[in-house]
Structure formats: structure tokens, C-alpha cells
Image 1 (cartoon, rainbow, N blue to C red):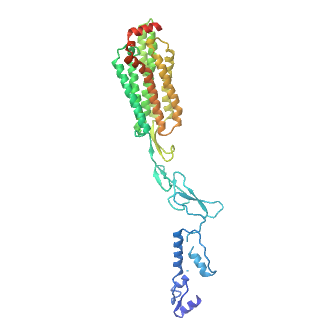
Image 2: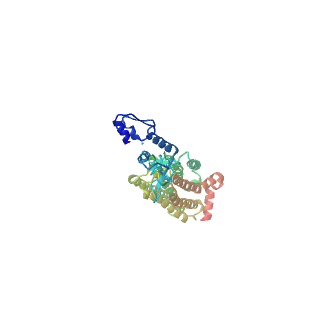
Image 3: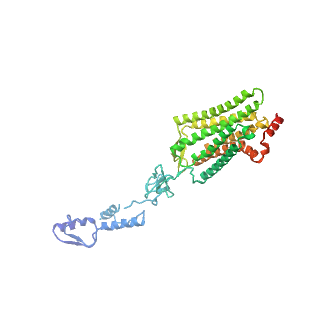
Length: 422
């Protein structure tokens, strides 16, 4: 190099056939030096491209221990760093091996809800709340929203069941209206029977508020509507039970007074019983009303759209109040079950309240152990079963007598049977 520089200073042209050092390309230092081989740096770039193309991770070099060889090493650094592991693909991240060099690691898959969309990522990216990782963990996709819909098999089945029972209840109401003057209808307070049947019709329609996409209005109405309708139905049963007892007492002395008490007490029980539930629901809506909520923690990879009760205390207080009315009806009906056949509705009420209480006692643990749309389905199922129990136990036996045993639906038959029992 010194000779070449010297010849350059003497302005003598120097031609080289083997010099590859990039320094000879500097025309300021060697203006009269010309070489016939290319710059070595271009070859180094070519080696780098080969390494990247084939994905080689280790490079071995044999060079002479001189200044030129050291420059070659600096030019590869006149490169991708070596690793002892394969590259981590999309969906994986690098986990460094303890006690090893940083180039030594293993590839771990991203957790659910996390992704890696680049090679050799050191951490995974967390998806937004309304998104979730796909199967390959390399991109975030929108979470599906789930609720008990009308198109769902479970939802449509519950709708068909409730509409069928609603239609049956309407038919029973029609039978009672048509035979309102018959002894068996008149003997058990026909007005309370009509109110109870109307309550059952709305009870079977009430689950329609529970099925479908939850909204602000549907969440507000579903529990409140259910509570008021059921309190009215159970209050009617309680009033009918008291009517049975008072009706039997009416055959004894003081009949006028007892008839007056029978008429006004049953109405009072109906109003007071349903008013208590109305008060609970009003306070519930005023202080902590139900509302729709998008829950991402119930099922992996899904958004559960559901109604939150708002106040859990108010919800269970509403259920508990209805249960209290049902227990009162059961106790009174059980005590009056041995009255004469004319007023033997107490036997049917006892069994219906037993079914009603059994359903709702089973409902609480089942409701607490389910999640998402199945929690809604459990409540709808409880509403349907308890309403069907009231319909079947109280009204179906009477319809059987009205339609298939009309000879039993006469005053003379009732009086004769009543006399034998008394």
C-alpha cells in the first residue's frame, strides 16, 4: 500500500490484478491506482443475500490473520447474527433459555387472546376486549356475540312450548266463560278463576321477553313483568284457598256475614299480595334497575350479551316474596284439604303449590350454576313449569268434569256428595 501511494504521488499509473481491499477505491488517496478485480464489499453483500435467502444461522470462515481478513469480518458483521435456534414463526414468541446466550431460545405458542404477526417476536400482542386470537394465533378476529335468540334451537323450543301452553290456557278460559253458570265453576269463585287464568296466559307469554337480543327496555321489563304477573297469579291462588275455607263456613250460622267476608277478604288478599310485589319492583327500578351487559369472561373467545339484575338483593327478594305467597297458599290449602267434596279445590291447590314451590326451590341452585344463555333458559323453564303446574293441577280436573263427566256438574250431585262428606 505504501508503494502504491508512493507511485501515486509520483503520478505513475499503477495497474493491479489482485488487490481487493476497498481502500484502493479511494481516488483521493490513490488517484493513479487502477485494479482489474471488483471491490470486495460487493462480494460480501452477495454472501449476506445468500445467508438471508437460505436462512442459514451459522457461518464459518477461514481467513489469513492479517488486516485484510479482519476487514472482511467487519463487513460481514474490503450480516444476520448467528443463533442456535430456528426462527419463531407467526403465532409464536421467543423464550430465552436460562443460562444460555441470547441467540439460544425456544418458540412458545401465544396464549389465547394473544397473537404474534411477525417473525421472532419477543412478546405476544394482546387482542382488544371485543376481539380474540384466531386458531393460528397470528391475527385478532371479532368475538362472536352470544345470547338466547329466537333462531337458537333452545330458544325456539322454549317459545313453542310456552305458546302451546298459552293456547291451552286460552281454551280453558273459553270453557270456563262458556260454563260460568255451571255449579263447578260457581262453587270455586269464578272471578278469581278468570283472574288466575288471565295471569297464566301472560305468564306463558312472559318468556318472550327473556328470549332475543337483550336491550335496555327488555332488561327492564323481563324481571319486573315476571314478578308482577306471578305475584298476581299466586295471590289469586291464595285468595281462592281462603275462599274455599270461607265458603264451607258459609253453610253454618251467620251466613250473611261470612259471605260478605268471603267476597271482600279474597279481593283484599288479591290486591295486597300483588301490591307487595309491585312495591318491590318499583324500588328495584328506582335504585338499581337491570341493564344489558357485554361479558367477555364467561366463555372463552365469546362475548355473552346478557341482562344484569342490577340489584341481586332486589332480584332474590322478588323471587322470595312470590315464594312466600306460594307457601301461604300451600299451608292454608293443606289445612283445608279435608273439606266436603263441594269445595275440594283445596286438594288441587295443595298439589299445585307443592309443584310450584319444588320448581322454584330447584331453580335457585340451577340458576347459580349456569352461565350465559343457559342461565336465561333455566329461568324460562322454571316459569313454564310452575305455570303449567298451576294450570294442570287446578283447572284440568274441572275441564274433565265439564267436558267428559257433565253428570257430576249438577247442584243435586254436589249437594248429595256434600251431605255425605259433612
